[in-house]
Length: 76
Image 1: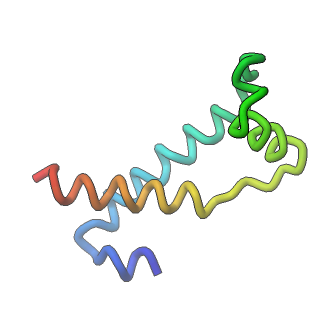
Image 2: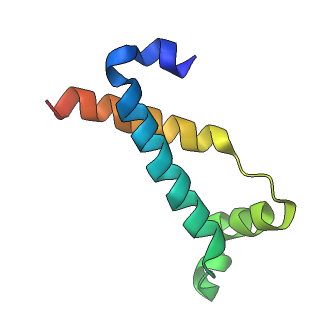
């Protein structure tokens, strides 16, 4: 559905953004958290994702979608 929404002209941009955001999420889940970050709501959610192994891929896809739309609008 995202590909149909974006169209052929932005599909490559979306794929590249998807790879970038997936790598960022992977790094966040692999690196240890600072104790102050671990006490926040985001840190608690990251620990929950680590323990269950269920990564919310929808967040990655929406981030890549928004980045693609912003790049299309302001990138040229």
